[in-house]
Length: 355
Figure 1: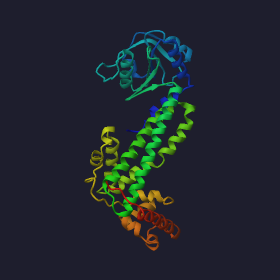
Figure 2: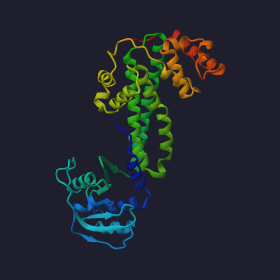
Figure 3: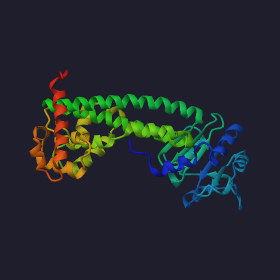
Figure 4: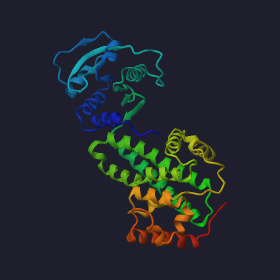
């Protein structure tokens, strides 16, 4: 699942609870009239508009928009959403544009948004809900009460996913340290990392629509997603062969492009990122482990990986051997050697479940 586009984020922020346009939509819902509003005007919008009447100098206010919505036709705002340009217009977007909507107003809104590349809001007369259509996105602008309940539940799910990811990463580390690691263990980390990121994107959209009420959500979300993108990329870098940036970038794109049903299948994930047979013994480089070490700049991590080439050689390096790497002085060498020692002690007392 791709990250929420910045353009959509900005639109959702301008439609958050407490904003003028959101107040207008809430008035329309309360009066039960329904509405179809183009949030901007360009040549594409103009080319599929007929009838209605144009307004001169009509500054936007929630009350004015709500009154104009009592008519059957659509409404057009300027790109800044500061003026009402037309009302009671008839939109005729191309009928061959795909839509999964059933109601006439919502079908028109989805096609108009796709055709004109402008956000369009449809307010359902019967369901009492406003829906935003913008490019390929469709988002219901639920009430703050409903949104808070939904976000709270989704954050709980994300917390469970993050715990599961942390557990799978810890297991991967111990398998690497004992020389028992296979590609299957790396795939498990990739699956769970991708799930965390996708769930985070869903919560992000809802957090944006909450406006100021979503500040605590953003804090929790940032904490739960911290380091996950780097973990995912470092895991790919560790296990993909041949080890070239282009290959890693293509594997990452393939992973992000998997459908949820495919992401749940380890074999399909492994194939997408070009791993060999999942139960084949792997020889990681150590990129992910160096991320966990902390206090090591990225360029120095790269030097360590180039120098030692495999995780086995990196873990067995003495302090003196670590100091041979450019950017590693006595302090960093000691820090790394202690970090590796802790991992090896944990691995020595660990009984792996290889079933």
